[in-house]
Amino acid sequence: MTFNTTNTIRLLTMASLGGLLFAVGLRLNWKLVVHSMKGSRLGWILLINFLLVPALTLAVTFGLRIPTNIAVGMLLLAAAPFAPVVPIFVRMAKGNMALAGTLTALFPFFSAFLTPLVCEWSLRPWLGAASLKFNILTILIVLLSTITLPLTAGVVFSHYFPAMGRKLLRPLEIISEATGAVSLTFVTVVEFETILSTGWKPLLAMVLVSELSLLVGYNSSGPSIEARRVVALGTSNRNIALALLIAIQSFPNTSIVAAVVANGLVLIFLGLLHVGFWRFCTSTGHRA
Picture 1 (cartoon, rainbow, N blue to C red):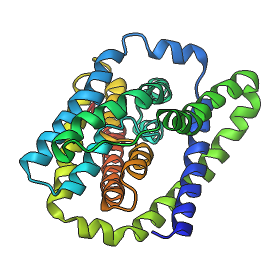
Picture 2 (spheres, rainbow, N blue to C red; picture 1 turned 45 degrees about the vertical axis):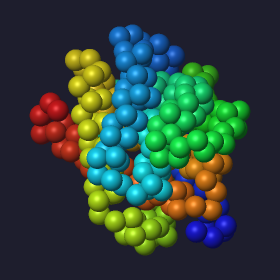
Picture 3 (cartoon, one colour; picture 1 turned 45 degrees about the horizontal axis):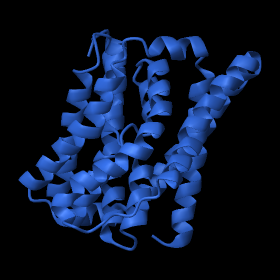
């Protein structure tokens, strides 16, 4: 991608996610946020996302003999849990919005410190003694400013200006969703050749990892269907922006960056399929 294309995608994505996350915050209040964490199994969710999913990805990449650069891209995604799109997917899938927003806002604090450690561990079989380059402070600032800040700002705004928040909610969602659709279409067209050049086996491996992660998350998050959908979507949809940030810091101008983008797009499309399935289940009265 050229510099201008990259900047265009970044601006569209940031505008869309910032607006959508702020809108998610407008739907919540502090009471819902606190209540959502009761019985949420946070420790278990962290263990699944920072240990089990990377280990699963490592096993799949070795078992299917995925090429090194593509495998590294997959492992970077595996180390970056709970994408900022998770609350939006959860809202569309009729899941627990408060839990989705709270977990998505909390994960940047854990990711800034745990993701680099997980990357060092999981990439060692592929990279040997080669050292990775991380700037933990930069990662923390980027994650907090693009995820935690707009979510928290929405909750605060809703608390102090509830009437205005209700008026802003739907127009903000419509504009942000439209911007997100344009961004996704744009990046898909730009990266379509990259996706095709990745090959069917690596993409199939990413699909396998995503579906197994979804099942593990769904079956490890308590009896509530709505909470299960949150953890399932959070575990299977990885933070592409975080994985890209680490890829650019450690592997600039390599095909690893393209591998992160290609596999990240696969995760987004799978997430949309899951959302569509759960919406169908909800509309027909099935519990899944």
